[in-house]
Length: 457
Image (tube, rainbow, N blue to C red; front, side, top):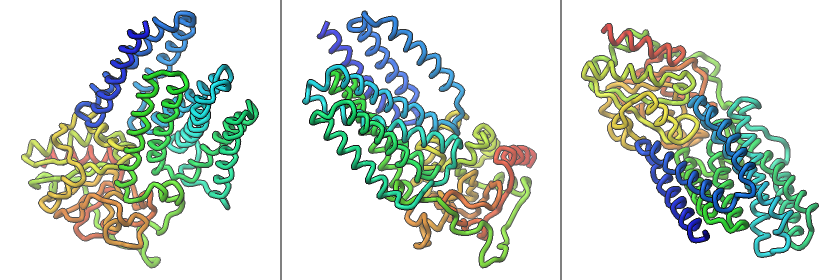
């Protein structure tokens, strides 16, 4: 039996690794998901058959409840709500790991000091991930303000909470018992909340990625406590990949992780939209027919999608526009910024949902290399990721963030609801550039008008 379950866990671990590899590309993401799910099903089924006979009914009922809740939620969630679903699932994982550790402590871990450190680590990290993910979910779901929430002496207070957790955990290790463990657990829940409160809504995906790595580490610790290879391998993979993703997202935003976590970035707008020295600044606007003519007679059009496209659920309409232009011989490219939207790959998945050919999607560096050859750059729902201030204005909050250099195209078209700035709270000087044309309105409605105008051109 032991050899059989060991082989099953080995196959599952290989499946997890292959799944992670598949998830690294939009082309193979679906296959990667299926491989990972199959591996988990194998591990659960074999464990149930070999070790869970005495609790089979409870395990099957728990599985049925999870499937009944998870499948409809995953099928009905909108792409714009995917980050908060990830936060929710991640929080559940962290909470489950913490509960497993608490149960193991109450039964046997207190008599095995060799595994007690793993129990304590599991409880602390799992509880922080659970409560922190809950706050991130609430921010993204707009159940609470998405802006950073700060108060005086916030960092010293957080440091004090962390100190209480450490002291309680150490006391538990040296025989403090259930009371000190409870203090460490409650302190960790409070720290998770305090940790995420000062994070702005647009930075929440970075924090979710970091908390996801925390959950992975908590699951790995559970594996050590339970001597379960699958939990160790799976948790380590999640922890490592979450850490790498967090680092990549920070680099793509041109900011360090400490800056994201502790600067309360986005707490207030630094300038009033559309104002300079108290005077209105002129912008150039165009009709759908005028812009359609620009697009139709271009040789190359670069479309830059952003979160506004996702909010408007306009991915199918923008694909229709791309197809209409392609029928006129226009080369259409989609330029994808690494942090456009609310999560890495958000735009890739959104456009894949609309059956936009993967070959039309270009990452930021590749898109920038051909921007000077682009006749029209069409920006839909993006702002900060194309703001030249990130490249040119040293005093700007976003200075140093890599951007898609649409200002180097021969002409620029912005589809915007209003002149309000992006999350960084600063004006985009490109909006006032003479070669920029603005079309105001809901992205989906504006794109529909452009599609009709292109077809009639």
